[in-house]
Image (cartoon, rainbow, N blue to C red; front, side, top):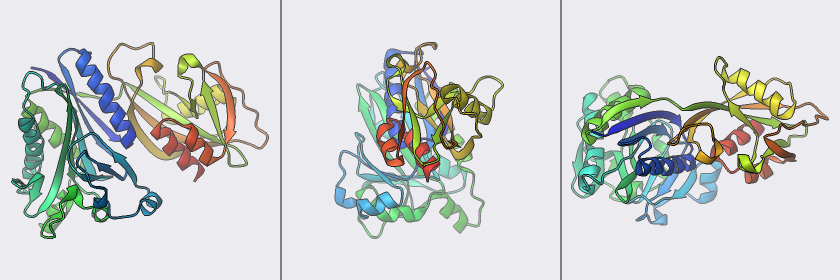
Length: 361
């Protein structure tokens, strides 16, 4: 029996989720560790994703309006039409090797069945519809499925509406289904209408993980992050952002202050220590209320074993005094000051762009 490593990640930027699935696919294909698959349970910020069969006219709102409301739009390699992801929705990305049992229909059926069983756990009767994929409560869709397979390694997966902002679905024709007799619902709406309590998202994720492990016939193991890290966005008295460029052997890219949380440290202490070590600034750090997870690029860490590495990062900001003179560490080769818009263009990682935006807003 293959092992299913279950990672419950919390907030994941959509771009980081795509890269995480790619890194997990490489690990499954390489067998590091042997006979092991992955299941990622997470939430995305508001995002519209267009599958291979999507029609752009199914995005009703204008790009400018969506951008002002904080929505992102991505074209993906999964099947299906346009789908919404956002807070309050349980997203599950299984990355499995199906080569021993190459049956796409059975795999998609297992994804749907996990949501049907999760609904049943809370006394809600859900089912499939012959003409449309996904999971339905009567005439309303509660869960969507969209998958991609490359040499029988899976990616993407399911999105189960636990308690999202249902108004967000009004900006699209969900899954391209324009039939006015059909709609969208959530577990929260169904339970509230029955006078029942709405479970926490984490509780529903646990039910999905339980059902998916059973349906995939995998031995489940739960894993936390391999590394806990911090980022600190230093902002000068004039509002510009201080960025550091890593040396070539450390990636060569621009970033704010980043680093690991050492044993015995809390995120706040690690953030202030890293800021001092990397810039020479000994000033307070301010939590940005933003924590996210992502897959670590293997070439950035040479002191760890091969295989998938998942980091959980807590973001901070810091205000630097007028006339501050930066003193960089040997991890970096230069520093520079950028306007907030310029910093967005320099930062190559979605989570760091989000942190920079929060620190300067």
